Length: 170
Image 1 (cartoon, rainbow, N blue to C red):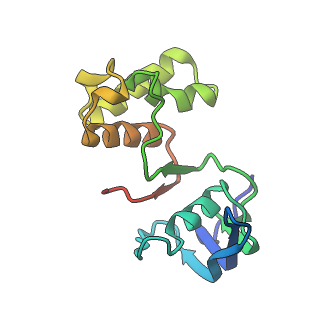
Image 2 (image 1 turned 30 degrees about the horizontal axis):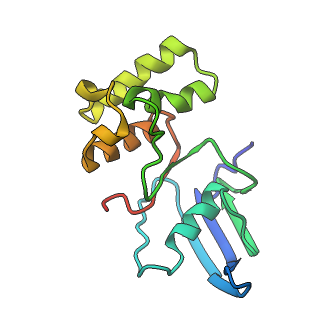
């Protein structure tokens, strides 16, 4: 995927997103929403529950598609999941049957990184988030803060160009 060098990192242009409710009614989460985030810019989106914050992040990552409008990353339309984006979900996305180390190494292994290199990198990231002593534990054995640390290591290990975080301080 070729980037447009002078384009914003993220761009939402007249984006709308509608959902069908369980009773079959249409619910609009976003309507004609515009957002531009420059490269290197730090942006926080704040609003009440249900205003479309998570929906916006899902559109940027490619996990969801807009009902109308256009979403661009680095000048190109979002078309599926983009490996340049790291996404720390609202709830941690740790596999309960895997140790902390095996959770953190999952991304690089999935992307084809050699096993020894992936594990070495995972251990480096666990040290950075102060979880080296807990790498063999399972998610249910961790405190909430430790789970957040594992989630950050799991996200940063893939060296994303863009980092999206959904309620990172909850």
